[in-house]
Length: 194
Image (cartoon, rainbow, N blue to C red; front, side, top):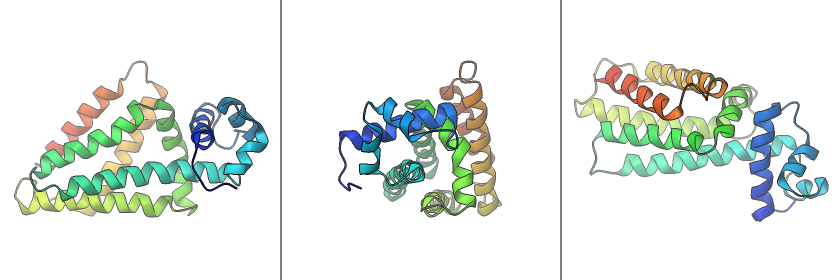
């Protein structure tokens, strides 16, 4: 298994997202991923041990990227917590607006990976949520957000709500634009905190 990244590795991951979104992880075949990526089936195994490794890599990269961006947002001292929250919501939705197939994979596979403790998905996900909590705490401390908000309960409510909304969108994307979903999520979250 090659460790260095390259065009083939990227092509495999992009193809896997499309195939997992179309067929579901369990019905997807390595040969279909390879065909979508435009490479030989055996080449997939030069980069990834198996189909699960591909899925875990997709989620690792998603959550590491989101967490790194969130860490930068949290560190910013020149913007208020409400604006930080907007930026977090924007970066979360931007991933799915630019890659709708990723939204389907996220909705269909993330909970399974977390529940079954596969790879580092749960760790990355919790790291992201812990950082998001820092924004809420900052907002409460600065009296921007309601001090009566139970942050742990709010965290669960929002993550469940986002998953549910993304699921609905992935099934009805033609009638429910993700940009509209994003704006409504911002409204619900921010007005629930004020």
